[in-house]
Length: 384
Image (tube, rainbow, N blue to C red; front, side, top):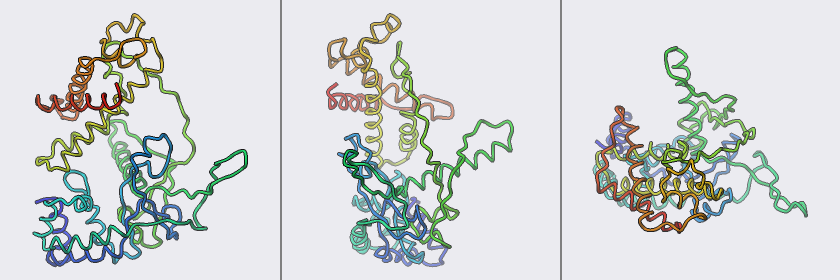
């Protein structure tokens, strides 16, 4: 049974009704709204919320803007009586994407499952179309919300007065991870022979929704004891020193650059049945990983001539061209192929680290060639 069918069946059994009867809660969607940022995270009495769509063009301009940061959608409702369809719409399916995203993409398999559960696809789509129009539109702030002055013209002493609203999905992610770390810390302390643990201290807990946290949003309902906010003291910035590769460039790429990509890839690659959404997610992760690797390689170009030192004599010529371009001729097609092939081999070896016995991950020749093509495509697109 699929995740969707398991979820609906469990809810219906809890109410002792049929799945078709339980799915009638879909008609309550017109009393809900889509949102990304909610005022109640700052003040529990706030009624403002907004839905900001991610704009990929803004993400590459180098400015910190709300629309330049991709965040997940949340669902807001004024009364817990209307919350039933929210967790259904935000339910992650086998590929990690939510039911709502699948429906909006016209996923025939998901629509068919709704039909089998007793909700006609036409009836579902009518409610979804109306619900998708209910997006929070923040035209102003409230007195109860904290505001900061943001300078826009120091000479003429002009400022913007801004309200800071944390993204709902980010606040939920922080809370979930802090709770997981706290639980693990308690478990480790009880077992003196256990591994080391991480712990986040000095967190602020924000109680939400007055006496009933479920009257806020879908994400808030998961954490009835409150949402964690991290310490807002500015971090101590330390300049990270680059490790210059003497032989293999991929050996010096820090874990923070690629860890989340491989964790997500390993989960998706092990899904028994891959539909179009899973395949697209895998493609996006491989492409994103290639971009991260090339971004990191660009950091070495800021110190021209470093490859001329004798201690880097073992570094392949194609990487000297990539990492120290002002000292060599541009990369040839053969050079790019070597870099791309090394990338596919590195991906294969890294994926093996997520096996319990560290066996090499079973990427076939076709998949290795596909990975090489992705890296080649990204290099050419960036003019490398």
